[in-house]
Amino acid sequence: MHSLSRNQIRKVDADAIAELGLPSLLLMENAARGVCSAVITDGPWLSITILCGPGNNGGDGLAVARLLAASGIIAVTLLIHGGKNLSADAEANLRFLTKSGLTVELPDTVEVARRLAELGPRDLIIDALLGTGVRGLVADSIAATIEAINQSAAKVISIDVPSGLDCDLGTPCGVAVRAQKTVTFVALKDGFLKPAAAEYTGTVEICHIGIPQIWLDAWSARP
Figure: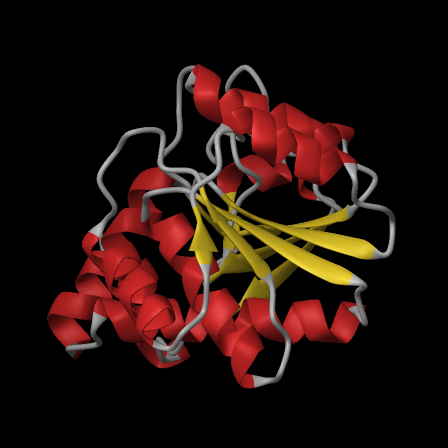
């Protein structure tokens, strides 16, 4: 598959879970492993700060924090939920982290901006705030954090899609993270093919999350 739309992304995940019996947590784990590989390959870093939203994109970020810790790399993990409940898989990964003794902080937007302003070019921000579902305008609380990311001197790796970027249109939903690299899952997103998207995605790396290619090929050929 050359690229996927927002609706196709949701359907391929749902169909893989339903038809192949792949647990959603396993797909999230495989996605996080791909992100960790990119983070370690591009390092070493003086520090790593992971910004997690309440949805499955944030769940990916929480899984990345745990897998980095398994390699002896302790990241600063910040959960910015904007008053929303966590998705089931994000909640599970938060529980895995806290039970293992790793700290997840819940700072306000002012504290997040202060911390990001202190980072330099040898530090890394992992953007796990918003995923492919975002459209319209980003909420003010998240928009402020996205602005703080863009103003930071740190390098940025976005998970699946830069937060705030409409994955179909390749344009910001008011504001979007400007990443140096985006680790996206299964296939490119349609919006990544738009010329204007490159200033937000940076280099795009496709990570395969354990769905067999033979099944994906058959899935993409369905009417």
